[in-house]
Length: 438
Image (cartoon, rainbow, N blue to C red; front, side, top):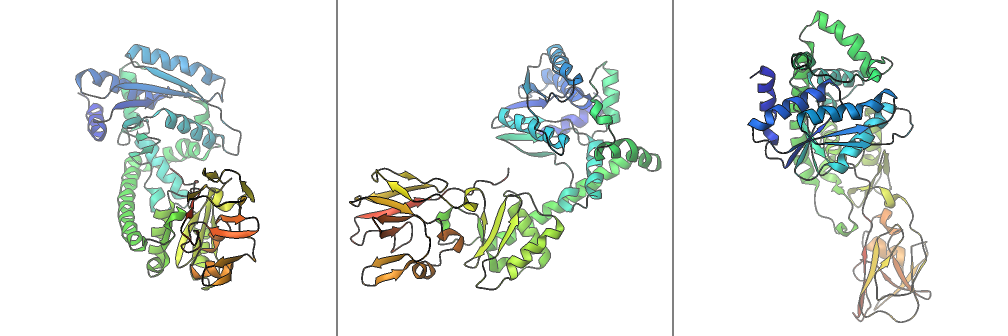
């Protein structure tokens, strides 16, 4: 058994209990060798069922022959192949757009408990570290490509990260394998290709073990990032105090425990929390966090990020995205109040109990509204919302139930959301904060 095979078997251990293994087969050297290795190991090992996926981008004329090449390769190894054709939208970075289209296709195909293997190897990891270092990445970026990450309903695994391209090429030649070469990979106008063809050879002549060393550095950074993540989870746990407005369905944190941390720990905790919600800001943009944190008590600060906004209200920070950043449409006539009412861009509204008589309408706050309360008479709605501490960003979205021009109820607010006699109650299920990232 070759050393390469032994390395691969060790790398595959975390995924032995998967329901299926799939290989992202481009037809290039890396994925071709991975497919060949797994196909030959499969009969003598209790591996999950093995299939391959080829994504055809249609960006180059030469690529039109690759699906047929992959099919011949898979047929020879008795491995089922799925070919997916994708459209790559035009944009500033064709490389990025193609990658997003490719992984989008993978996500639609991967099922729960399945693993998709890609062929990135040690040289790729070294290039990734160097590329990100030159872009000023932090510890997370310098961790390089993870050996495993979630992908749709399944998992993406990289079992070749400890194996060099030279070892893969030697295996391919020894076994008479043929692979395709993407002409795009030779274009040094792309930064990664420039590093691969112009920079890495120079470094290798001076430091022959440069790919091993850089990959080891990425592992060190990954370990450090793991410790930072543990620290962030501890800090966030102290800030994850329940709010009376949990029914808004918005991610939020209590500000005070975060504010007591050092600036570096604040950023670390917030990076960890925001990672699943938005693309993270660069170093210069973090001034927006400091402005939000330090604003006066009566201020209504917001920090605009790539995929939403962070607001401060009621001693908490709140994440808003998607429909929460757009004013909902009103007024809406409620013709069938016995049935739930879908509010355009604002969730679902229903009446529990006996439906009030007369024509009903749903509106949103414009200012100057007055509500009649038992034993308190007429009260300004603004004052009532202040008394209950309703976050300012939510006030314009609270459904107001009117009978003609009389304000009957304000959804979800105790003392304002029901008939004084207790015959009915107005319940609102807000729209979700729907732009979080996977």
